[in-house]
Image (tube, rainbow, N blue to C red; front, side, top):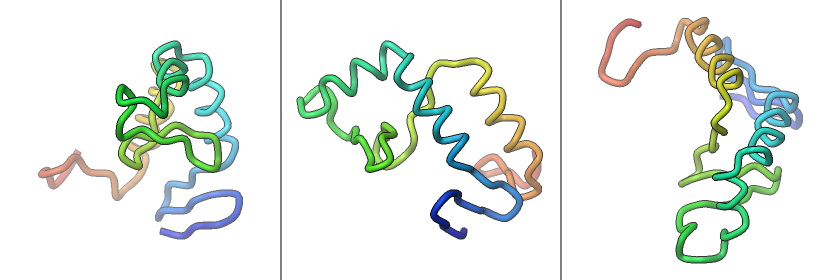
Length: 92
């Protein structure tokens, strides 16, 4: 995995700032994630953090908003990757 200033590259899958920007925008529109951001410093939001990039994460993993179009894009991109496998499986 290669980290660059404006994107992260992992084999054939590249995540750009544009994609992160879209996730951030959708996080702000998602009422559940917006509430989590509001209570970040409370016990209710344990294990959540707001990164320096403004993206909400849970235990270091990016929180994906409840947005069907965004989820579809992620699934389509992961299925295009030759390295994408389900845990414990040898093929898709």
